[in-house]
Image 1 (cartoon, rainbow, N blue to C red):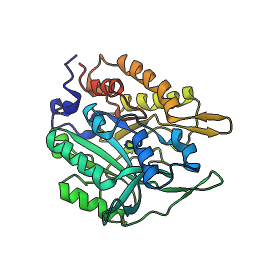
Image 2: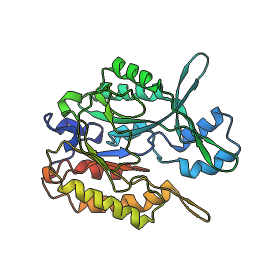
Image 3: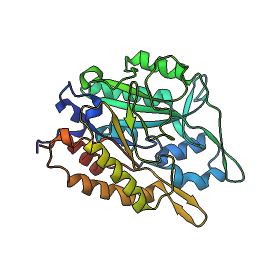
Image 4: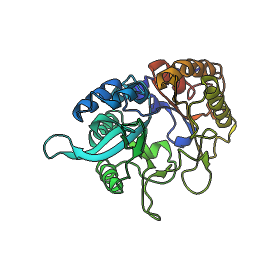
Length: 321
């Protein structure tokens, strides 16, 4: 096995002519939804006491801040956006959320932090999924979706232009995007206008195998609340599909292990699932290390509560002989 470089700079050892879809990349689900961001977000909105508190164990998806996720080797980030609001004085920005739970900081702050990381680690690239996700929590313990602000695309475009990031519609080669973020778009954009890699149907569809930016993921992606063993079976099926696929297919394979179950007297939180799934994933990947990366490509593997050990094991798949 070739030695894995420091996780903060692991992509510098990857040949620049590799297409980004030919890598195995650690990713995080609801990347910004840490305990501190939830607490501060609720305090900022005056909602620390009340109904939203019952959702806290379901809202938290990570223990580690995005800035530490960078250093752990994570290169796919999932950001959920809410309506524009004041963040002190005249600073009005799009917020961040996990459904009906507001998170502290805003989209501009997080994207700015990503730019700082990329300028300091200019051989790396990151993939940033941005989705409109705002909901309103109702008194009868249901949630109502807030209509999407179609001007979000203008705000995101301004940031991508400012930082000189990649907003193309095809999966690029690594050398094209070193020091840049790649936009994965899960928000409205007018028909006929090219802006980012379109994964707007990611929640409802298994694959997009036509046109630019092709992708494939787990079966029945909108289904949630599976037994832990059932979630692993779905995960395992997609990992095998990615492993057996054509290395040069220019299809990004996504394997999301995120889940939660909300049923009467039967609650499973993201942490419950991750506590079972992440060790199983690490063991399974460890048993697949001794093969050529060209026949061992898994695409983006998305986890809740992604720790150093999990990210390291995913990154290792790029460096086996």
